[in-house]
Image (cartoon, rainbow, N blue to C red; front, top):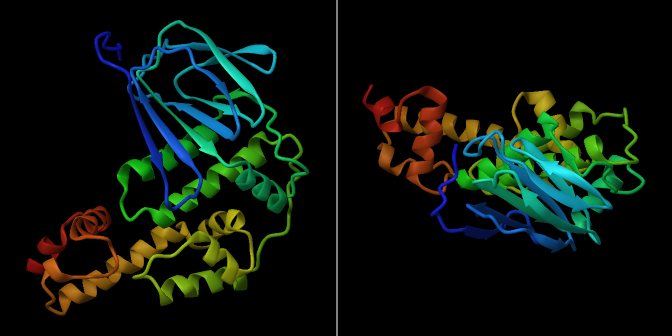
Length: 276
């Protein structure tokens, strides 16, 4: 996609209640040469969508030049400076996230890394790119996203350590099914309420960074999607019992979110299901 030369630069800053002290800068049509001293872990994603495949930014970081292209993720650490030197074609859209050092340090300790130093500055690893793209999608969607955002964020930080950390040593011990069942039971007991990933981890007795990953392994869905499936099942029960679709309440923030999830699951809206 060619960049519109007359479009002004637009920067939207978002601060997430679900992930404290984290900021996201959504940047459109920027041609500035960024010069940033990093006090946090800063992750920049240049999406494939909306950017010309030949777009390249050349940046100086840790004593050498690096190339950022569509589909790449740039990883900056606290205490470092980066300088964008030039563009071959500026990105029409990119976004970057400030992650507090404490969050990365805590994850490193829980995952068995001696320190949270990242061994790469720019990567095109698809797993890391997809994880940050998924996090961005939960923020854009804003669809009952507190738990979804926390899980997506935990996966991103986990992959920073496991895939990009310098001193990560995999731990082979996995939580027992009993630990995961405790988290599952809490979701069943409070599926209409707002849940946080840290409280699910606490009741299971394992790290939130492990919980989101291992829960998906055990039950096929991450905790937030599992919770939404329970909500949809209850909505179906209410509709079959004659409750009008407009007043069905299963914990979604509003009717539009219920309709979106219901149609995503079954291909019809709650009203269509009720009439059938």
